[in-house]
Length: 357
View 1 (cartoon, rainbow, N blue to C red):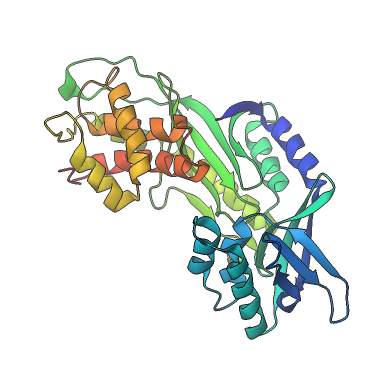
View 2 (spheres, rainbow, N blue to C red):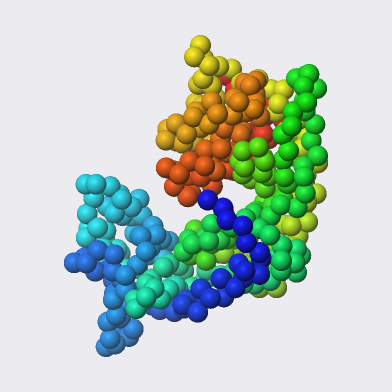
């Protein structure tokens, strides 16, 4: 769960972590997975060079297809993630396709953990790094070193920071004939992954104070995306200029988002005889990739949210989804972040002519 910190303290953690990080560009032909010891990569630097063996993070299996043409990524994933899989088969498949492809350069990203040097990512050599510390310097210039942020994630996979900049000025929907004490904070989320688990992004972020549900907004044109694999990430100064632009763009969206909240309170969700939003769950599964496990936690949150939002509205559904995305510890990190984005998307749909039946 999110922890509060200052931007400067996050920057210090980033710089301390960097001391244990290193990169190396090697030939794809120098790589081989060890079929005898699953989860180890052998690197031979030069035809007669020494062979070094490194433990690698499981994400490397998923990145193999992007660096070795023809490598069956979905099948390798099955071999390492299912109970009846066999990681040694994944290794043999990887090695076979390495022998078939034309030679090219590959970027290896390492981290020293204790006494061991661990391979944390394998990417094409054209993949552009965006150092976390550069982005934090940009954020500090904008908000100040002592700005308090919520550290949503800071691990070996990604950095996710939530900024609150003001209270959101929205109104209770006039059709409800009530005034609700339901303060919502407005800000933005910065996120990036230095192991290729997503783009560098700046997006709108809201936090409902009565339940601390976190939500992001996924509207096209309202999220600043910088792909590590594209031309937009090749020049470091341009990357940071785009981050600054993203921050300003998010700030300007607050009024439109407040209007979405107001409208969503007046849009009713159809319920089953048991009071369950079955049709809405089916819609979310079909259109927003909300899995059965996610739905279980959303439905639990739907009941809880009824204490403060008794009407079966799009607003209640959005908060049920973001409650699950903020508080459901059974869900994976990726699943929770996904639901926070779905919560924002629900509000956008609620302000449109989207059908929930």
